[in-house]
Length: 290
Image 1: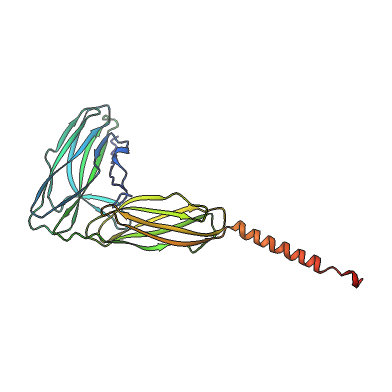
Image 2 (image 1 turned 180 degrees about the horizontal axis):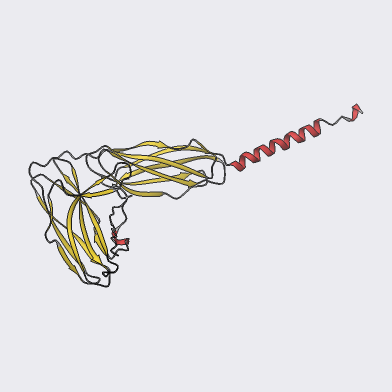
């Protein structure tokens, strides 16, 4: 039976994404490409040559077919969809590569942007695919290098912020959740490294970092939870992100009052014990009254 397996190997620093993509170097696919994410800035009317490296990790020779598509990202699920290019500006110089086992080769592409191209970012997928296996159990492996192509008209804007923070003021649970969104209000994609850390006077968690890409006029949710500390007290959640393109960091903090259930139970028991002792000793008649 013919089985078709599509292995999309996309990466950035970061979900990802427009998402956080997994680096192709860590992928177990028989066919790999690198880099799995390319950033290119070009002016209208100019041309540029780029390349990616394809690698055959199998023990058999393979024919690799190259094609160029554009990709879109769903606003809600962040799923990537490939489609026929609306702007036919990127071309592979060769459409087929032959790779021996463990061999790597360079695939060359030409970018040619027309003079009337609008200033904005365009999204392409440089796809490489091959068929492996035998007739009884063949499979198709497809990997992708995502190209973020920005047509630069001199008005490139990097602008972003943290929105929709959801941090509990008081927590009684065994874990402390947090959620916030990174909003990209610029006109070029944002490569962000988000971070979150919970700190107390004598206690703290390690810094949790996530890499993600946020497209222009989009936002990306960041969610997580920390195991609650043992001791009650006032803790501080420090969270935010760094724009890897500009190096600018946005850091926010929020206090969290943590009251574990055991501490509430302990206070209740102490109050009951104090009340019992008070009633026992204050209720005794004095010697002079006997």
